[in-house]
Length: 110
Image (cartoon, helix red, strand yellow):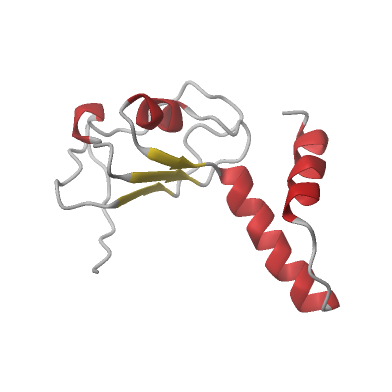
């Protein structure tokens, strides 16, 4: 499967052959209203939509994708999984993902 980097200009129409859409920008960070410029109507239920923004965890993009029936992945999960890998690498101990997510949510007050 090929990956494609798209520089957005206007409202981007997600190609029909797309399986995964990832927002790797800070759009939506600290404010859940800013909109990633893509055409909402081109999101389909069989797509996975991920957003690297972790605060707020439920960005406008993820709310829009969920409303269209897409599977969504929030930035909190990505951050926790990165932390798990780092913790395991440095300590050799396998941390509990649920505990780490709860601690992060408590720290971020989300």
